[in-house]
Length: 323
Ligand code: CUA
Image (cartoon, rainbow, N blue to C red; front, top):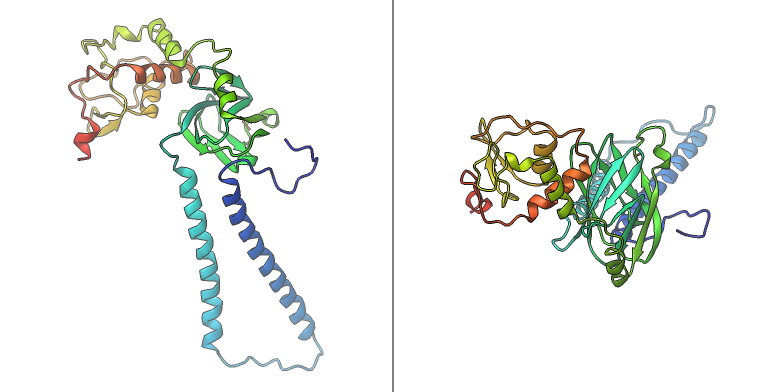
């Protein structure tokens, strides 16, 4: 956080900061230029043509040249804004392959962060410098919005639906974290800090104070809620076997295919009748109210960690579908 009490521009601490600021600067320059031009002309013409002044008030003859210029000029200008903005939007929506993934759960009124090692924090996010980061985010209740001004990133965090955010921290320091969506009467207190550390320092930090790895927590919950009574590993239970399922496309009852991704797993735990696999009945109880979003993330981590060996026979691999 800067010592200065008033800053016109936030700190620049991610690889997007310059890109966003340049585009924003361009919009501001264009806006200021036309605001001044139009104001000067409005005031100038109203003085020049004021009542009682002897000036030529007849319309001039039509000019094709002028007409083309005032149509083409603004068109080119807004197309520059559109293409520039679209390219930057695409870049900010497309995380690279080598991201470090961190989970974020929004809740009235706090941010819960879970690192891959199992280290958890609340209203604080520690990050290694120079590493592309991907946040996978979901809300326990209402819509929140995860906002780090110094990184120039903001993304809504929705109930029952994963959203993601990626960026690369480029400067060591501590920055503001905000909720940028009015989410109830303590919305303004839903704030925190983002700390960017040297990679070695982060590597040490993230191993400290770990209670339980997400995979272990997932396995514990899987046993505790007796998921294995239906989801038996040899596919003989009332529900499908779950090992090796991640990333596969599976046929649904009533037609269609669904990709077994994070969202599919999450919905299958908390809203199991949303998508029923072909060959199965809608008999699984919902675990809404018994499992939190954090719990379901742990179970997903556990299911993803299961060996790829026994693939249920009615699943189709991604390769079969996209040759
Ligand atoms: Cu959460 Cu505003």
